[in-house]
Image (cartoon, rainbow, N blue to C red; front, side, top):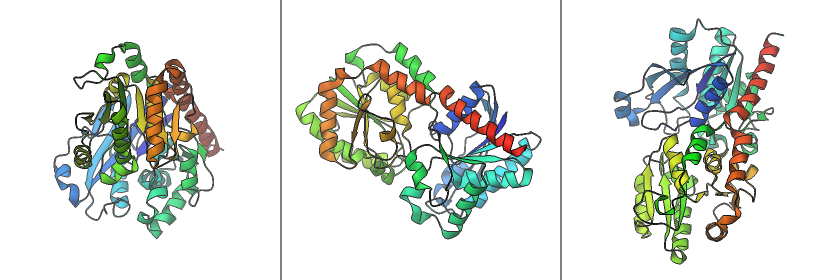
Amino acid sequence: MKILMIPSFFRTQDDPTLGEFFFNQAKALIKLGHHVDIVYCDTYSVKYLKKYFHYREKEVEHFQGIGIYRCRKFAPLKRKSGMKGNRQVFCRGIRRLFQRYLADQEYDLIHAQCCLWGGAAARELSQIYGIPYVVTEHSSVFALHPEDIGKRDKILAKQIYEEAGQVICVSKTCQDSIHEYCKRSCIIGNAIDLDIFEEQSLNQKDDSAGKVNIGVKSDFVFMTLCYMKNEAQLINKGIPLLLQAFGNVVKKYDNCRLYVGGGGDGEKMLRHLIEEMGLSEKIVLGGALTQKEVAEQLGRCDCFVLPSRYETFGVAYVEALAMGKPVIAAQSGGPEYFIDESLGIIVPKDDLEKLTEAMFHMIEEYDGYDPQELKKVAREKFSLQAVGKQLVELYQKEIIKKNG
């Protein structure tokens, strides 16, 4: 099959893991012998004019067997939320890229990643060229920021879902969040490229003195990951709460350390909080990480902890499991559907006491977790092969419907 994928946001040279789960779906299909091209339009408002003029992405490249076609567009009316003033510019960019490079290709299906606005672009191309499309919904905007979706956009979202051959949600919580707009959908979790993590796990040395590159021996290392786009993102990921819990933990276990991976505009707030709590010597900020670097740091930690307030899925938890690391998560909508007591601990959202207790439990009962079992669960449920097979089966049904 020939698949055209349209993500609503995508990796950049400055942030190579952004939208990694979109790219992983493409890799999953390539591994199963299918052809995949990705087309994407970067849009910039006045606020990001400097980034627009310093744009470094290639318009056309081929990476790991996937054709990637992208452009940049200036969207002067784009609101801070990105919900309005962006759609037309984004769709126009996708349409022009398709006409310039891909119109002569005979695609079997278009796969949009998120309704807003990959789904809008897919719907336009489908109407023009008669190619069926499906939508995978990952976005938390419907649950967390419904006020950002205008009346016209709500109507359009319903039309995008209704005209799609199938709507896929990455979790039950994600499915519930779009129920107002879409009454029919199925659930297929995110695909995780476990090759990097499994390779790193095999190469991992049992060297407690060098678990995290912080220059000191650490008895127990917690790790967290957060894309720090802004301060609101830090709060949604529960990072301030985690710092408080970690502050409680080090009062008893002085040699504990916390490694924080991720970069963005919210890092300034994070540094301020760490200094304010007097934790600068206990916490390492790793900055933006590639997927390989994520695997390396997970290999050096003992436990992954991320007490998010809301998650549509939770890719980072699966990556930790793939490295044989137990996890601590909050009841945030995604992780509680696949993390049980054999894999880690689920705590109530925004509960400092329970989070602190969970971190104490990890330190004191760590040997009760079986790394091989954790890796097995990640592989069987979320590997490229496992998720890719589900996607191909769904695609085939849609193509059969089109051909009558």
